[in-house]
Image (cartoon, rainbow, N blue to C red; front, side, top):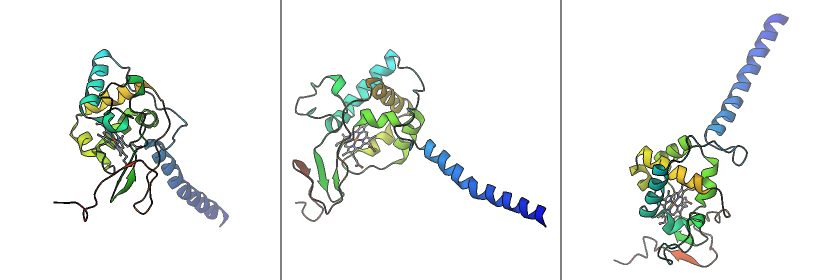
Length: 182
Ligand code: HEC
């Protein structure tokens, strides 16, 4: 039965190919095509959105961690140097985390993906991911557009280290639950 065989083989091929295509599409959806295609901005930045984005980033404290020396300089860091990440480690029971370079991070996400990430992802401490969940879509969009408008800059922050690895100094040490004084 050569015909039946061919049909069967084609069907099997199709079936085998399907998951591959879906995976590739899914990867695209999650922005895992990093660095290849820059997702387009959904909308241009109007004055009102720009001001809202700047204001939210200032009052929500994003710069405190994601901008080097922002707190020490009492916020007097020029805007073009904002959110380029920091090499100070935050060490605790979760390991050592580093505030990411958001200027680079946002380049790989579309606005829709940013909203999804903000609603779904629990980042490690001390990143206040729960603050992102409290924001309206409009506020999240303003933050996204403002950071995209600042443009890509700086280097990626150091990568996360697991708890058993000693990070390079200086780092900020959080007491582990056992050591915390009452
Ligand atoms: C107290 C310090 C702190 C503050 C305040 C803070 N972050 Fe973070 N943020 C971090 C750290 C540390 C990480 C890395 C977390 C990890 O490795 O999981 C991070 C990670 C992130 C990530 C994930 C980036 C990636 O590479 O996956 C995003 C997005 C982000 N922060 C956005 C913001 C925004 C927007 C604000 C202001 C509303 C903010 N953060 C405020 C410390 C902070």
